[in-house]
Structure formats: C-alpha cells, structure tokens
Length: 184
Image (tube, rainbow, N blue to C red; front, side, top):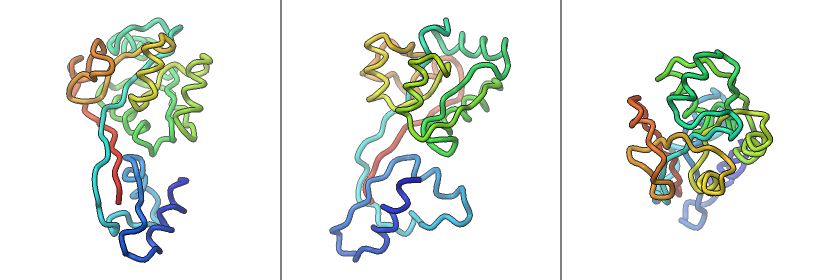
C-alpha cells in the first residue's frame, strides 16, 4: 500500500512527538496479511482517534434494486453475476465489508478490486459495476444528488447524513462495521 513508505518514515523518525502518522481502518486490516510486511503498527504510540463512522452500501441506479433485501434476492437469482467494486482492494475496509456481507447472507458475487474508492465510484456511475461499499462523506453526497441508490449503512444506528437509509442490522443481519481514522 501507499502508506508503507510513510509508515517507514515515521518508524525511523526520532521519537520526539514531532512526526505523526495519520491512518485509517485499512492500514490496520492490511498489516497482518503479508508475512513480510515491513512495519509493525503495534510498535507505534497511539495518540488519538480522529473520526469514526459507518460505511454505506450503494447500487447503481440502473440495477433496479431499492433495498438490501432486493439486492440479496437479485444476487441469489443470478449467482456470481452482480459485480461489487472493492475500493482499495480486498484487504481494505471496503473489501472486508463486502466479505462480511457475503458471510452473513451466503450471496455469490463477483468482486472487482480497485486501487481506491474513487475509481470504483467512477465505474459504478458508468455502469461497469453494480454495487459497492464506501465511506459516508463521499457517498452521502452522491446519494443525495440521486447519482446512486443508497441501500444500507453499516453502523449500529442510521446516519444523520441520510436518515431514511436503514442499517444492515435493521434488515435482520448480524452485521456491524465502522470506519476509523486515528493518529499514531
């Protein structure tokens, strides 16, 4: 990931409190994956949590689904056909959110990895993929402008940004994910 050089720079800086490392959930998820990962985030000193919040699951407008239940039904009717964008790849928080949805529902989908959520959103708007998870700040705007169909948020309660969009838990699934940002 692109955060490895930054992490190495912080790890090699004098421990005088003048060098800070801003990270997200994906940094924490990705670290344990490769055995030769060059950093140990657990050796950094935690300073503070900066923000936390839910992700949101959206579908492209032309897919014809208006709820999580309808999306699950479509995925079950056409196994493997529905394409989910994985912003940041399978090791990102968005990839993990997708895997948890698969685990909780048994749906069979095709995951399409992207380097980031921006390119995935472009392909969603262009009709090349069907659905994706993303962070609320970007996707709430897209949903409010009617560019995507919001289906569900991943937090324990509805988001103030889109109060009409239910949580995944409200659909009866044991599911909870929040994105996280912090400083080490």
